[in-house]
Length: 375
Image (cartoon, helix red, strand yellow):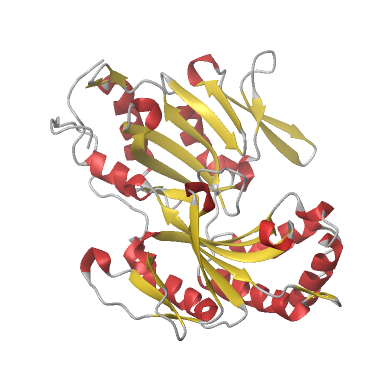
């Protein structure tokens, strides 16, 4: 809610499909973390270095059973064996697990193996921010890469992604292929997976193939929704990557264009003789309507339509957020502009029945009462 004033607007559909209740996923995340907690060869880091502090529990730990109920049912205590050192975490705030191959400062920037438990943001939106990080110790020896450690990490990835392909993904940092140990790591992964992995680009594609949900929309399935979203007034198409943000004003875009060259189909947003971009729409697996407070609106609510992929795509705010369409000016001073906000709710009402459309908690709450006022 933006303020206490609400208007009775005919925007909410008779029934709404929401993202799975995060508390229902607590047993899955708990079972996954239990294996890491009991592993003497692992380090569990709690917190995020970008926030300025990280706590590490080295060696075997215990994940204590639930002590609370209700909205605190996901709270757990991670306790180091034979020690009083512990950390409190909320598995009810975890939305996904990333199995990552990434350089580590602790290893002199050599490749490391991690399992990252990502937390939700305002309104339950998915973010790329790590709450808990499980790191594989003893990756290197005089004989090179520890293949047993690589196999353990990979088997845990396979187990988790098999159980919840929509909540688990494998991410390979772009620095890994050029690392001195990159080839040795690739060989270890090939041995662990028993797959042919001639290059890291092949590894990312082959190993992540299990992450695609059972019902994956192709470009034409959500094309109409995308075209209507691109026609929203006073909005922007946003592509966010590490250290790069590209923004196209929807009022200046000429729409969506499809090109066919033999059996290959490509997609272009914007006319060729003006600003435009090319996107792999067939990689999109779902669309999420989100509403959350953002700094650029004075920490007031803004509305975003996310186009998501199964694996990480380099978005530092939301790792599965391939691109989004968000409103530019949903307020006129302190007054919400209903003429700008309303079409987003109308768009959701039109497409909400599809399995590939979902909402976060912020958007769901906004559906129950949109602040009054018009721009």
